[in-house]
Length: 487
Image 1 (tube, one colour):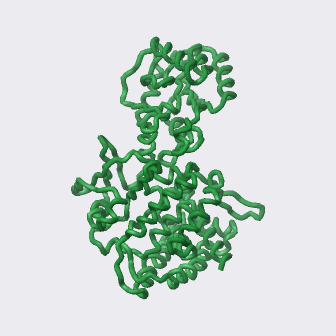
Image 2 (cartoon, rainbow, N blue to C red):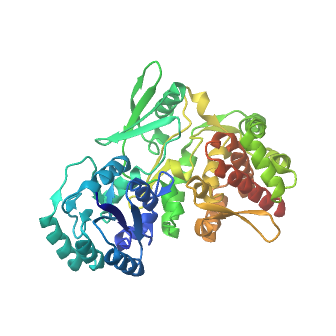
Image 3 (cartoon, helix red, strand yellow):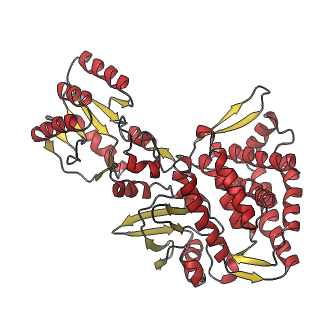
């Protein structure tokens, strides 16, 4: 009879002070990767075990020790310290399944300072679980490592307490859209897709951008095209995107100010195309208002759209999506009419926080994943568009929803209410952003009106994530109510 295998995910250790500026004072297991918490990724990878236990406190550890002591029969205990992070979760799943057949203690990776993932028999598992971090745990780990066999496998583990290792781990945290494939090797990031026109436009965008804009972008190279797929390459910067830092609450006012400095420097660097104020207004109608109306028409014709519409009507939006559209239109029209620019700008088109790599230590910012262009005219957009895209992360909380850090509650009046993780961004973030908008010459109401159109426009693009659809509609409702209330 084979022994039972239990996986212990040990998430008790908190980040050292030097990492708090990057990820905050959280459990390592709460780090976000591909729209999942890291601890949830580990739990899913351990599905082949008889049970998975997550430790987050000394009380959790005490309960586990009592459980190990009470278990009868042959058991193996695979302890996975979250600070020893596997870079390939798919391979980890296979590795864990093999550990059921271990005949002796197994070391899955070399010891990193005072810890390592190991398969242990009950008595040794208890000793390690009750050891104190630091010298005590290190002495137990080194003793057990001497007695254990280190297995060969294809899973690389990194120590998340090391800043460079943490950046490597987080740089693989962004989930590609369903039509894209991403890979990184030897410092080169390769993006491929069957949407050949899209890959061509993204690759060509950098060369079309004027020189004074290129410092904000990642150079693209090695474009390759075949009959059914295209790809291009970029440098693989080991820098987390700003969205991860934002939703984890790690931005201080100083760091957020640095991000705003860099973002508005990019906005100021966008190449203008003077076409006259009336023509700019007309382009805004096409690129912002008409696009929203066209996409909403598409969305309400889907089963998902009909369901969201009914839920909104039942949850406090009497007229559903049609009501949101009719209220948004005059706000957007007023924003476009009042905007005084006489030029379009060479735009990124999607500078939300998840498309911004940012390192506050050196003030580095790089905008990735532009909509792209194969000729200059393709990248010319209404000046408000890029600013509204940034605002829909900062003010709208797009990245909380995109990373599934939200819930939808029913209030005392049976109306639907969106709740962001930990209350969303703190109030000072929006206040600082509003102040900076005004200082840079942008009108907050105009930006937010265009932002409302973005949330409604993206509805048919996220049919593969139904929970998000209702959230985006509720955010649009929040913006509309704010603008109506301040008119």
